[in-house]
Image 1: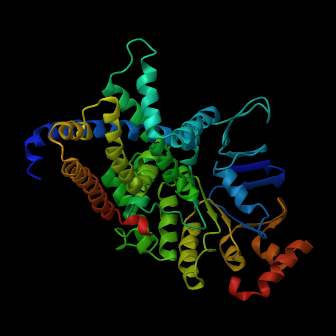
Image 2: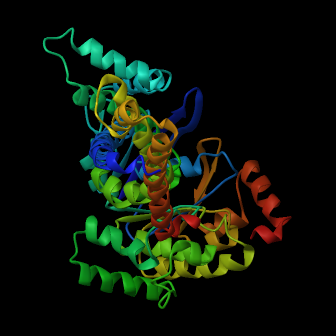
Image 3: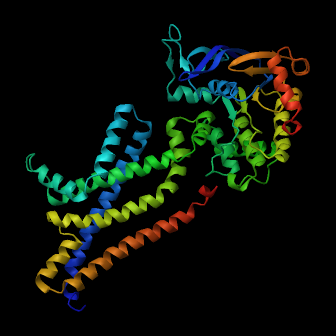
Length: 215
Length: 258
């Protein structure tokens, strides 16, 4: 493994890009999911159809195809997106569809009667969302949300294929010069694993805080 | 104070309410009896603005519930979110399945409407909520979550939650039907206490004896129509229609149900 050590600084810079990309995509896809999930449940019919189509189409397309389409397709419009922008857009579209489905499922799993109880007390729709729906849905969707976060971290590695210098790209560069692919890939795998396992662990701890949906 | 006039309600092709007329004066208690599927619950849900209806009207203190008036049934418009919320703030409803908010304690369940609908300051809302929990016999359990309470206790919290905001009318929809028999009594006691303190109520129930004790008027519904109504003693001891006699016979042969 000594062969890896000189390359750790460049891999660390790649890791920074990976983490930054994953964070941006996690935030944007969560926003897409929150808005999309609410709209697919409560929105007017055309909006629901559009979102249904978005979710079903995106979930049926390989991420890599989506990424290439966005990156190479965007150059048809003026200067196009750079590698980083294309990765953010493509991964957000991809993860946003999953998040939309997660939020939709979470809201759908609420008993209709609980929502009616909130209606009949005289809460407006915004109050119901804030005081009843969100506090009940958020803990329910925490496990699939963490799952998707882990998927996002792993999916960022695809961005190396359009030239984003992330952890995988940095690893490949190192191998190009230093050889010993197994040592480098195992190192990269360990780093991805630590991030993913750390997220899952944090999610499990957070889940324990919410005991009230054990009713 | 509550006027229901020629109320018609269908779910698709199924007509559930076929022209209901009913009025409830202030501080009066009306019990609605009737077999399953007779439209009792749907009627309550129309009064609570939880269901849309095709024609007729529900008025509370002269205000049309659920709609903005047009030239007639065909031109009226369903009220928007804020107006519906405002109207529902004057209506309290208790459900068969309690429907407490599982993420809130008993106290928080009762406080929610006081703080966010009645806009009471929190300390005051807390005081009012505690008084209501005391009244339904749950002082000391205010910090329990619903899953830590028995069905009877949950239902009493639900009654406190609905009554605490002092709605113009309290609607009770088969509130003891989901309870174990030994828990029914504690809930009925609370309702009786409310009725005697002068709260306007419409109670849908299967508890014939309870209806006789607590109601000023009994209404018997069948197949979406009001079949009989009147003073509880008259209606329950000398029913005029065969349908109501048949209904009461079923209860007489099944004492556990009363």
